[in-house]
Amino acid sequence: MTSPASATAGAARDGVVTARHLARWLALWLALAATPTFAIMAVLTVMIGGGPADLLCAAGQGSLLGGMVPMYLLMSAFHSAAWLRLIAERRARPCRPSV
Image (cartoon, rainbow, N blue to C red; front, side, top):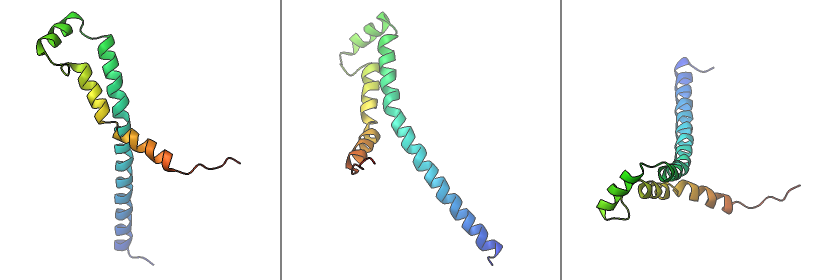
């Protein structure tokens, strides 16, 4: 028979394990969501941007990396590590023959 104190400690440990598992799962899905979100934001900025005012502001900066579209594309590239890791893990798995 277990004492109430040891049962509480076991439940607390299970709660910590569950919380860590949930945190890892959430971090993975947020990392996977970042790349397409930034890519969509870049496309939308090009399609429905501010128009001539954006062109005037970007022309004054003198840099190709100025403006929102390059920033969104760079953010998409920087956050692509989760996708590359997922693709690499899938390629590393041996193929299972279909039955």
